[in-house]
Length: 328
Ligand code: GUN
Image (cartoon, rainbow, N blue to C red; front, top):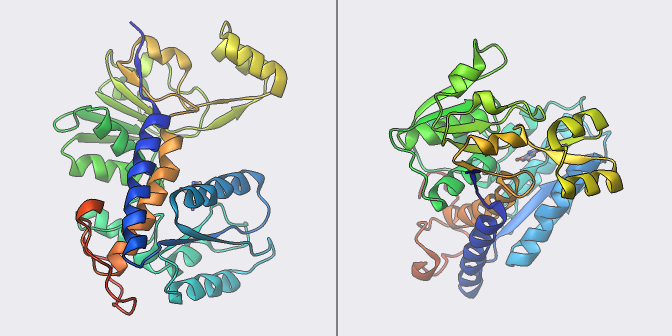
């Protein structure tokens, strides 16, 4: 029987609806959460992502501001932009879209973000909070992976979770989240010996390497849950044939556009797995939903509020309340 498809669109809609409800309560109490997106230069993929993030803010009633420094910006200039946003009381979340231009010291720019406004969860303070199980802001894609598992009632405790990919944005924080949820976690990478055998241990297998269709059926334990984090574009007809031959919908799309999107998994993994996130329509959909959720979380944390559900939310304290980044 083919794997159950974990519907990222459905879960993202649910989360956005919950966050929108929370925003309404906050606005009634006199606080509108605000997100600033810093998009440096003219990378078309980044432009598309940031546009989607701004649109999601508009849908949910979150204030958003897009700042677009030129490609020629220096590290110092970008740090000054971030520091200006740190000072603004109407901005709860700051997102610096990556990658930054090659001449910019990305780590220095990310370090300048106030940890209380770090809705990407990339600041070392938030990385430390996550690794030591303190409340804080968690990177959006790993947080989205956890939401999928939770909402699909997939057990985590005591399960073997294998993550392929050790990036700071996905692999490492997801390993922390799964460990904190009592999974037994293995992180694999390009130097891992006998990768298929290690992956076959996974009751939960996460593909986050950025290589189209890399995870094939021989990597999959029968019945495993696969979270495919990859978003890769393929335009080579030979690659297309290898992965999608006989898939009429994809063939039509490829004929029209000359390219298609594929995750890090070969589509045939559905024959072995128990549940799989599709690409597109899987993990990627949750990333923006979790960004919205983090923005609201940051707005509440900065005002010293607990993260009680919206219906129980306390009225907002005055805006002068000192910022906090370690309360939940
Ligand atoms: N570029 C690719 N993914 C991300 C992300 O999650 N956040 C930011 N800021 N930039 C990215």
